[in-house]
Amino acid sequence: VRILPEEQPEEKHDHIDLVFRDGKVLRYTDPRRFGAWLWCEDLATSSVLAHLGPEPLSAQFNAQYLYQQSKNKKIAIKPWLMDNKLVVGVGNIYANEALFSSGIMPDRKVSSLTEQECDVLVNAIKTVLTRSIEQGGTTLKDFLQSDGKPGYFAQELFVYGRKDKACLICGHTIESIK
Image 1 (cartoon, rainbow, N blue to C red):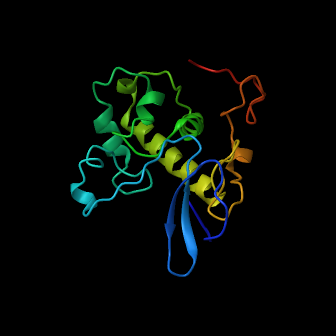
Image 2 (tube, rainbow, N blue to C red; image 1 turned 45 degrees about the horizontal axis):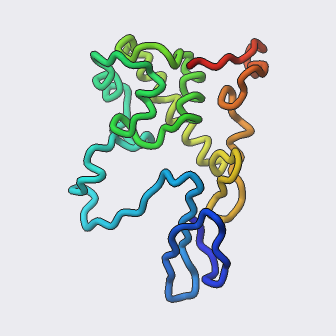
């Protein structure tokens, strides 16, 4: 989402313009078409949003919540973290980085998490996301901030996109786990 002059030409992945009286537009750009614009009167009663988990930087996303949600789950931790029903906004990049920071293997079963590990993981997720926001996001190919500049968090990635490269911490070769 960017704020631009109304006369600014649309680009390939621009999908929606909200035009303001002052001649500016709020332009929605989504190259991968993962997003959506929804109009609703009350967010609290929206059927589209009702099934979503908490925001990862909110107080509701904490170790106790994560631990309670982990019970009896037989899937691997990484895809579980990326499920918007558990928590919104933890995609592939941030799940990889938070799990690495936590020292938790992404292919481990969710039900094996201890409450202490959930605390470490929640803190890692919050730290990774906060740092990414401070750096303007993660530009890999075509992501741009609202001011049209790239995000710089990609320069701080420890594991995402680093398969077969040396670990920045220990020097061992980074492997991909499927």
